[in-house]
Image 1: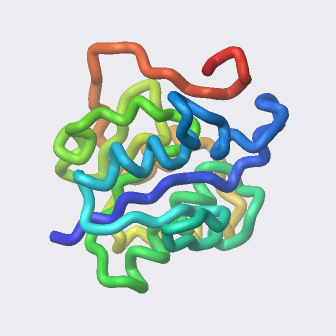
Image 2: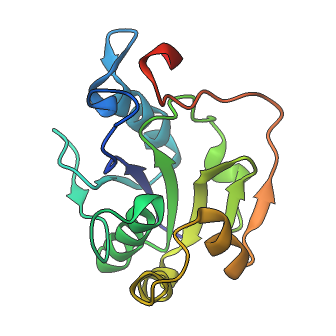
Length: 168
C-alpha cells in the first residue's frame, strides 16, 4: 500500500494577515515543519493549492476556492494519477503533526476528531469527491466525513491551529 502525504496550502490566510505557510516556527517555514513531520510516515509528499520549493504540487480540484474539501479532492486526484493507494491529509497551519498520524488513521477513511482536516482517504474516492463538489453539495468537512462513513479518532492532547499571528 502506497501512502501519499498531502499538505493543504491553498488558503488565503485572511485572518493571519500574511502567508501562513511561510510563517516561521523556530526559524523554519511552517509548511516545511509540517512536511518534515509527514515525510517519515509516507511514501511521497505533495503540496496542494500552491507551489512550494522542493516539493511537487497540485491544484485544488475541481477548482480553487472550495476550502479544505477542494484541497482534499486535489490530493486524491494527484494520488490516483501517480499510483498512490491512500492519502494522509494535513493542513499547513497545524504544525504539531503526531509522529504516528498515519497509523492512528489506519484503516481509511478516518479523521482526527475535532481536527477535521487531519484525515486519511482511499485514492479511489477521487471521483466521488469531485462529483460531490461539482454537484454543489456541502463544503463542510463534517458532511463529507459523514457521507463516507469516515471513522473518528480521538487524540488525548490539544493541537495548535495557527489562524492568527498570536497563535504562533
